[in-house]
Image (cartoon, rainbow, N blue to C red; front, side):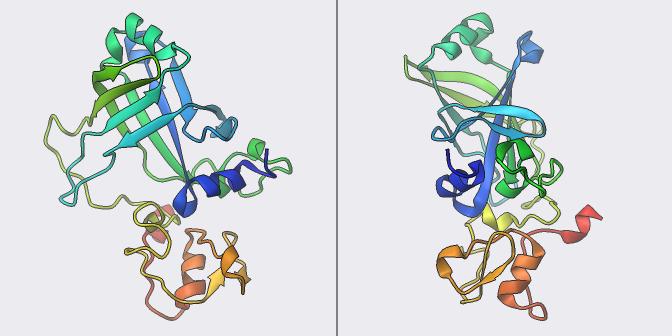
Length: 232
């Protein structure tokens, strides 16, 4: 294992954010399962819960440009046969709840780091994405694919194009640092801890307002993709 799980996760996910999932079967009479898709990494601890590695791929989660929720597809590894057993018991998991949590690596629980983590903060995260399983689309000994639906689809409600999140730039998850929404192309570099550096290899946005100011300049217009006042 590397010095910290966060170091491994940064290599696996662009934009320095971490995705964690839970599959809640309690409304079907079952348990809740916590997992993540970083199969090269061991358990990840967040908000006091242990998320275990499990091959997973989600396509289409999020919103369209008009603010309408998509209908994603969830692909989950089935090598152990656990999903086959659960599908037999709980009617193909129809109406099970799937929740995607997203946070920054530096906010993960102290248990992930050999020396602890003074920045651990269970309250710093993006708004959760919640779906239910609509149907099992396909299955074999290695993979199961489920169609998901949003609770909003039935009522045809629409959401804002961006969710209100304090001190965590959403451009890291939509286009990435230096992407089209971030728009930064300069040569002011800083680490994910907001420490100025001359080394472009260490240039990694923290997602904070401070990190944005270090690049664009404190007195210049910022393209910060968050709402700092939302946490006040």
